[in-house]
Image 1 (spheres, rainbow over the protein chains, first blue to last red):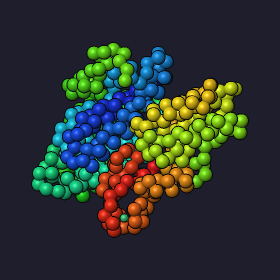
Image 2: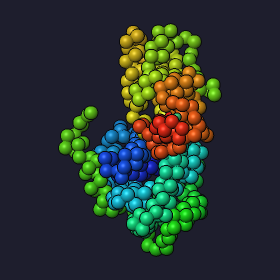
Image 3: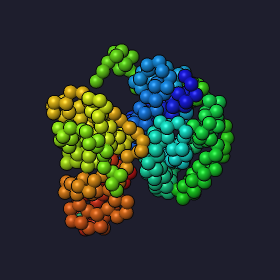
Image 4: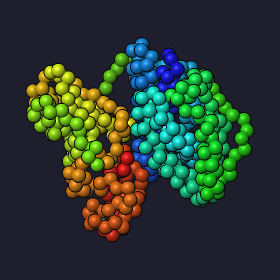
Length: 249
Length: 158
Ligand SMILES: [Zn+2]
């Protein structure tokens, strides 16, 4: 795989694992409208995964389709960031992850709209519109739950603590991505850090939540070194294709 | 707003256009793909008709069905050589929805895309509130009218 193909694959894997996790909420949401909202956000991530994985396969040039890449790779071949594969936990933990990711992705995909790779830029231009209302929604939830009851506050705070060690990875780039950023195809993630911190700190303050100290960071996703959770996620996601190879709807 | 209209090459036979005008959104069947601005371009490549469409939302589940419906409509109209292509750029926006489409949506009970106040499609009151960013499908949000109390969908600005 060339650099751009690896990059598209990584963004596709991020979207696929997040979409799969969110879809676990379907029919388990706290109330009907929220159930539908979670399913819709999951759908947005799945749509994004399809576009990036298709493109990764196309660039690779070995005839692998989006389905081949989604269903027939093993954990070590997945390059999603670790935060995306973590279990959904309770609603507080789901919202914590969503918010921390949305706060990164809205400006990230906005910047990626200027990618010199036309396909990446076109996908980013579609994705960024959805990121904006994802962020609006998850930010509202953080504030409502944080500044809510004693229990909702505690769960929201726990969710933020749980996710915090995985934040550092959002701003790291493997070598191929750094090369792509130099060519104007990818975006320098570190440049977005200050804006992200400003957004997140303001929201946490409004939500009466405390910001964790930056402590140890957990990383490895882009190199294919994952938490134990990814294997379980993939066994759900890939079961049908593994059990009945070539099965079609 | 007329960047909205699909580009149709004059050489494209009438029967192709008539067939395409009958293809509707499976989730909002009062809207044709032309009303929605999904239909971007119809042209001839030799004897082959090339229809270009663009997705609304990245995860829009209706896109597969829309593509199949286009193929079915062209097949039934006796068009022998055709292909349907998807283009991502420029990204679709609700600004491409036609005036006719907006009117049909309103008559159907869905508030057309509006960046500011969303008026109730039942009584016209602008005193309405957002209930959820997501309605019955990915492209809609859920609102309620404070005047007549009726809940309704709004086709989100995108
Ligand atoms: Zn009303």
